[in-house]
Image (cartoon, rainbow, N blue to C red):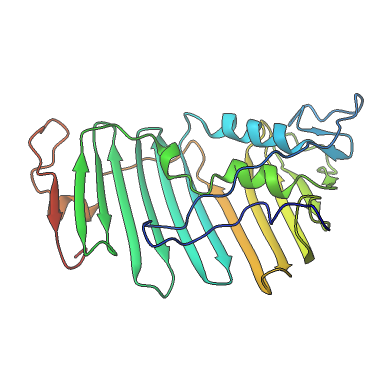
Length: 259
């Protein structure tokens, strides 16, 4: 596959970052969409037997905007596994937790709309708070929509509910890697798409021949429109005076453990 770019989404662990690095950006050419037999439940991303990965990614972003949900991600490469949990009430009120398995690294974030609290275990137990509102989009690294666009930019099979269920997901599967990939074996992708374009689950697995390693991702949304976020115990313990109306919080604390 001479001349093709490297694997679409290579996550790298850099010394200066608190979690896995961001995915590489690239242009993904969407699969042509037939004019007929569009699926109105996820239209125009899914039409007939084809999927426009770019449109589906955009539909997924719209479907998760200004909604509450729980997002779990497990991302494994040859050098490690990152586990992410994101609990979202709205764009500015959420809890985020990421862990690099086996490397004694955990990062926790709580945003209450007015300020953000952060605990970074690898940074010698640094506790910080800021008055700047931080949208949840800042913690979507990698962004699930970008993964949808990258890994479904290939020949995709579309499996619709046989009983005509209006609320059941459309299931998308692929066994061929996108054209922009470096050589990959045993490629397997499965996505479940809800009406409106929400990709409620995405699993990716393949053998990356260029690195002689298994790539394995799992992403899942749950409790959509049924999630609330309250101030977690680690914030209450370490910022006892941190009320929503209290502007006088110290900028940084250092502790040995979350407690």
